[in-house]
Image (tube, rainbow, N blue to C red; front, top):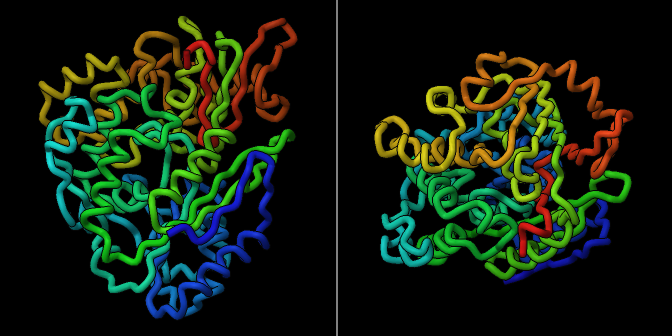
Amino acid sequence: MLYFAQGSPTTNLSNDDLRAALTSVLDQLGHKERVLALPPDFTRFHSRAGALTCMTHDYYGKALVDVMPALGTHVPMPPDQLDKMFPGLPHDLIRPHRWREDVVTVGTVPAAFVAEVTEGIYTKEWPAQMNKLVWEGGHDLILSIGQVVPHEVIGMANYNKNVFVGTGGVEGINESHFIGAAYGMERMMGRADTPLRRILNYAQDHFCQHLPLLYVLTVVGPEPDGTLVTRGLYIGDDHATFELACELSVAVNFNQLDEEPVKMVIYLDPEEFHSTWLGNKAIYRTRMAVADEGELVILAPEVKMFGEDPEIDRLIRKFGYRTTPEVMKFVEENEDLRNNLSAAAHLIHGSSEDRFKVTYCPGHLTRQEIEGVGYRYADLDEMTTRYNPATLKDGWNTHPDGERFYYISNPALGLWAAKTRLQ
C-alpha cells in the first residue's frame, strides 16, 4: 500500500514538510509499542534519513526501541558520525550490524528463478539473509528509511536492498554483489527492474509478508547553485512505492552529457569517503561518461584504506582492480576470493577495463599502495592546487591553461553518462 507520495524535479520539501508527511502516515498506522528503524549509515548522510529517523524518535519516544544503521559491509558509525547524522538521538538506541555474525537465513530464492532473471549468468539459489534483530526482534513496526539513487550493484539503491544487503550476511551480500557485477553495471545502473532487484523482490514477497515493514524513501537532488534539497518522499510497503521513487530519481539524479569528457575530476568528501571501497563511486558512477583513453582524476584527501573490512582490504591489495576477465579467472583459481565474492565484484566495479585511466590522489595511501592495485598515483597537494574543489563548479570547467574538464563534487549523488553511450 502506498501511504504517501509527493515529488517532482522541482519540488523542495522542507524538514517541516517531511515531518508532517511522516506524522500523517504514522497516525494512520495507529499505536505501536516496539518500533525498529533501519536508516542508512554515514555514507548516505545527504539522504535526509538522519532527520527522518530523529523525527521517528520524536513521534514514538520510548516505543522506538532499536535503531540499526544498515551498514552492509561498512564499519560501524563512530560517535561523531552518529551525532552529526542523528542529532539528539540517544546512542544507547544504536544497534551495530555485524554482517559476519548476527544474521539468519530466512529463505532461499530458487536456482531456477535466479537463472531465469540473470539470463543464465548465475545459476545458484540465493540465500535471503538479514540481521536477527530484524527477523526475531518482535517489533510491531519496522521502518526502513533511505534514499533512492542510481546504484552499481542493483540499478537503483534502497527499498528491500536496505534489508537484505544493508542488514544482510556474508553469503547474501557476496552473491548479490557478484550477480550484479557479472550481469554488468552498464546494463543496470539507473534502472528499477534488474535481475538482482527481481531476486530481492521474490525474497520479500515469499519470506517477509509477516514482517511489519514500511519503507520511507527520499529522492535528493541539487538546486542550480549546488544546494541539496529533497525532491521527493514516498512512504509505503509495496513495490509501487519504490518504483515511483525510482522514476523521480532517474529524472533528478541521472546526468546525461552531450559529449564524452576526456578528463573528469572527482572530489571525495573527507567526512564521507575513507576507503576505495566507498570512494570508487567516482569510477562506477562516471564510467558511462568518460571518453575512451580519457582520465579520471580522483581527489581523495581522507582515503586511507582499500576495504572497510580487514579481509576485503587484504584481498583488494592482493588482486587489485583488474579487468573483468582477469578477476573472473582469479575467482576460479583462488579460494580466498571465491569465498568473498563481494570483494571480487568490487574489483570489477573499480576497474576501468583498460578503457580509460584512473589517477588516484589519496591523502594517506602511498604511491606503492595505489600502483599496487592497478591505479595511477598523483600527489594530492599538487593536484588540488591545479583542481581546487573550493573554486570549481560542478560540470564543465576550463583551466587557465585551456584544459577543459568535467568536475563532480560528490559522486554518491547521481549517475553520469554520455548520451552517445546510451544509444
